[in-house]
Length: 471
Image (cartoon, rainbow, N blue to C red; front, side, top):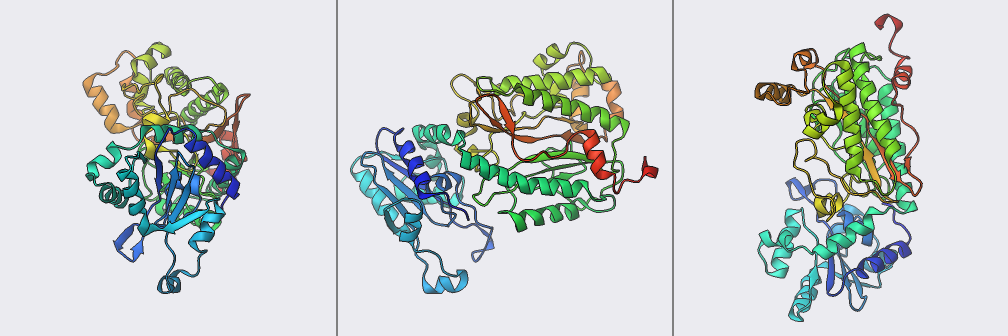
């Protein structure tokens, strides 16, 4: 686990409590989560807001900040000799506190007493929404409220303060994301440089996950690797990979400091694209390139999403799969048959950064409210971009048979969709192209070294194993 300098965490906490008027800030770290019996647990991952302000990827910790006095306390556990036999030595709790610039450290079991004292004094305790059942129950017991009330009474002022702060990535945070991207690039290049036909999705995914485990802190989310790219988050299966299909690979890794990458590429299993595949691929690529070019501070990400949607609609109209005016088609939501997702999301310590705090705070605000039209309703980020944001840009075209059949039966958007032409695409799958992008004062920068994504680049990499006779 990599820690930043202690001054980094101290400065982050000072900025945080300067935005809260009064009371106690409680940032509760995560416990371990058992898989199937108490001693066998999932790989541990700390809560991201705790990581941001207190740094340690260690179970059963909590950060406590008195807003009015500036007092900071790290709560945690000292290893017993019996525990050390199993885990090996760790720094003492006092040493861990010093590593992140905290002068006071107390045993985790004493935290409820501090909270009870604060409540007896009539002080406000600020906490954020909880997503782990164990922490919901802890807060319920410590604060004497029902489990249902824990997230209901989370502090909106604390949520907004954390979102404001974590949304703007520092140079050292961007460097962590780029370190994760270095490993992601290695995974995608390896995939493009080897024959795939005859292997299973699970076999290939396992090979790639091994890279994430050996060179980084593992995957930042369960790997998506599938020949059924129209299923948006399809996990790898024992399905054999056949020649002539498209293989969609969407994955990310955690850097040493637990910052995430998130990259998608779609490649032909034959080593080269068929004419039909190339036509659709070029539309998605154009949508991504034009969306990238539009990124700059002051522009709403929803507008860039709609720009990508128009490019997709225009491309499908040119192919004869849609008809009419692209602008009107997007306004009506007809494009969402093929592009039902949002263009992207924030990226940072979480692959969907800060989503645990509430998407309405991260991607939306007073100016931008969620549009419930199908297609726009899944847009995770709509608000105006600012320098320091790191976002994903991931347009796609998906031919989803069940959705096509349903819309056709319901006669939805028949003025724009050529249902008679879609029969030839029902087994096409889907294409997504995704990069991670920093919003700068001048515009944008695609993070990491380039990962091949043009037709020529991908086919060139595949040429070592795609023989000329296959073409």
